[in-house]
Length: 208
Image 1: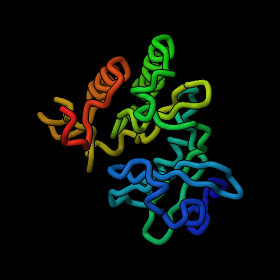
Image 2: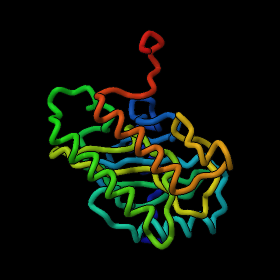
Image 3: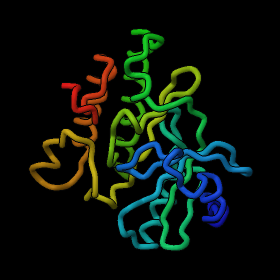
C-alpha cells in the first residue's frame, strides 16, 4: 500500500498545521485542506489508539470501496503518532450547511435522502460490514449538483466508538457497541433534519 502513503508534512502544510479555520467537525477531527499534489482534500485524524496491523487492514478495506455516494479513499498517513485518512474533496460544503437553505428544493431534498440511503446501504450490505461510526449531516458532503457523498465510516473491526451522533441510538445505549441498526437510526435523524430544514442538535442555547 506504499502508493497510498501521504507524508505527514504534506498534510500539515495542506491544513496549515491543522488550523481551526480548516476544522469541519471537532468531534471527529475532520479538516479541509489544499495539497499541491492532490488538490482539495478532506483529512480525518483518527483519535482512537489503533494497532498498526489493524490500521493497515482498514486502509486495505477502505481503498476497495467505490460508490457514487461515499467518499473514495485517496491515501493515508501513519507518522509521528498520527493515524490519518485522506479523501479527495470535490464538494461545495456539508449537508448541515444547506439544511435551512431556500435554494434547496423539495425535489433536491428527496433526492439527497435517497442517495444518502443508497450510500449507507452499500456500506451496511457489504460483505465486510463497514459500520458508520458517526453518521450525521455534517459528515455528508454535497457537490456542485447537490449530489451527496458520505464521509467518516469505518470497517467492522472497530465495534466500539469514542464518539457517536446524539441522540444515542438504542443499540448503543443497551449494548454499548455499534451495529448497522445504529447507523440506520442516525439516518432517520438525518432524514428529519433534511425534511424539517434544521439541525436536531444545536449549540445555540436560545434555540429550542
